[in-house]
Length: 420
Image 1 (cartoon, rainbow, N blue to C red):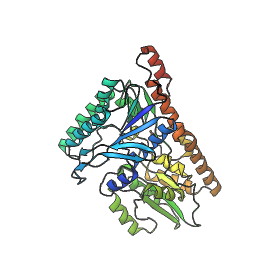
Image 2: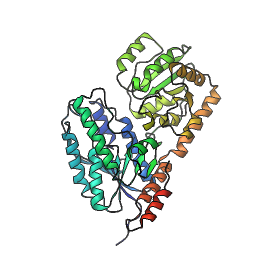
Image 3: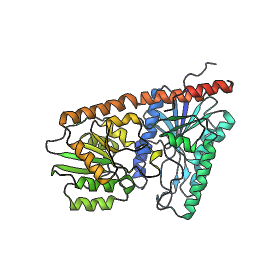
Image 4: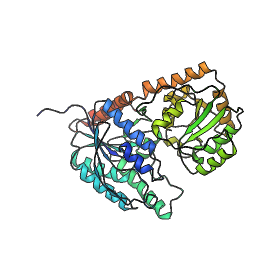
């Protein structure tokens, strides 16, 4: 029998074809673009590292009645050269978790096998426990990819939902203790929810949509300040509007791409101020072009919120890849090697944002172009699928040391893997 080479990786999560996500988002309040983009970037990284990848995925949707569809059926798909299977489930509170767990168990029973790796995208309890039970039986190395803390409460949650979220957090922690290791967006996310587990920090992967071109020069006189993401107070969008209003210059335009609870308020601001454009929701290919035509890109997220040290704003990579000067607050989840390529808004107040935007807009055109090009080259060289895939492969290979090896050998292998 010919021995296998390389790593066999199954990604269990939410990585669905583009057209499936587009169909869902047209009828759902859930904003799953970032989850979708990260999932496919992770696939690209694994493939760049010569791993064989298969996908087991569910459609990321809000629970009924926020999404009016009750039944999601399974089926095969092939997207971007990768084979996958959609898992069916019933979209009702409680049944949603149970049916996703059953579907994942059934499909995992047909593989992976001993020595393979099961990546679980996110802290989704049904998938974590399906993986843990598989690992116990087959010796598969289960590695969750932690992109958010578990149990984040929503403003719309009732008392029952909050109680269920508390139970969910306990189940997630118990599952993480039984995993071989974790990949996390930030160190605190791994340290607080999977203490003692080997971990690798992968805050993002530079994987632009097909067809994206380098920075496009804008027409003389037009200068866009652009934000893309959730349109909410939690992300500092209201502060950004106030900071922008304090900037002089009739040639300036504030353009906001996304959706959220501030959308109606932002339409009112646009009606009252001709320099503010009404918010738009565009697909990722179109957005990339809009970012590349901006004078400055901005992330105004406040730094004092309890969850920010668990998160890395993926827009940081998207912004830098556009080749445009970037203004950002100093969020603790942003690794230090990004900071030379950002113009920091300090403090993270309206005045701090206004001052940072004014500095970025005052840059001579040559300096703005130089900064933009340096940021784009930074993410291309250090956060590409090839670069991040190599790090992930080394980490997974260390975890996958054969069970027959001594404990000391396995510990040494894991210690040799990169941690950040």
